[in-house]
Length: 118
Image (cartoon, rainbow, N blue to C red; front, side, top):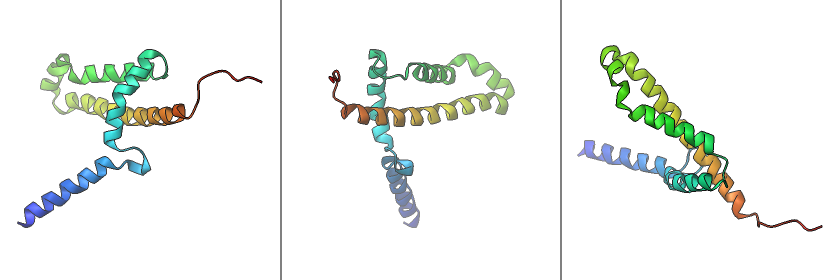
């Protein structure tokens, strides 16, 4: 009984941590929801995240690629270290870029497009 209460409390804490952003930033759900909008805005040329998104796509392909499997079989810990390093960089990049995009999106909604007439 006590074990299930601890497990429930742990999952509840994890849920709160994921829905409320770290350091007062946007939550994980908001960040994940922003990724498709960020890709669309970048593809349209409205948002300047093209190079960063390309680097993130390359990191994802590197991690998911089966080509790297042979060194991992022979080098074990050292073979997995490069994937762990890449995954850590990718996670940090996604968090930083989605936060930057959400700030850009919030500022953009307060700007009225047009020309300044003097």
